[in-house]
Length: 125
Image 1 (tube, helix red, strand yellow):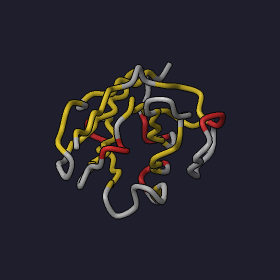
Image 2 (cartoon, rainbow, N blue to C red):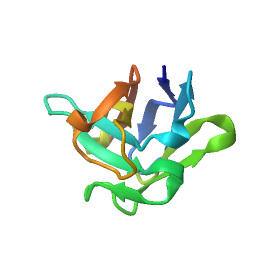
Image 3 (cartoon, rainbow, N blue to C red):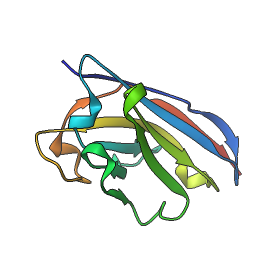
């Protein structure tokens, strides 16, 4: 059974960068679309980015377009989220998740069946 573990969060100044990792175990992440979600203080969970099976396509929320990039390394069974030019509003708990059967990405949490434990990202002004 696929399990996901996020890492790479931390405290960073506005304008800085972080790279989050989503490491899979128990099964290959190649067969799942993998999404990144975040939940900021007092906010609902929102989709940030998604990469399709085998990385054929990627999607980004408007709020992070041009600043974040998602990628996957099959050899390491890991999906990455490179976050550049971070803003205070990017602060939140970041989660990676594996989508249910299907090739394409989704921005809806309800479409994902396996979740990591989350990693905290805090961006100071």
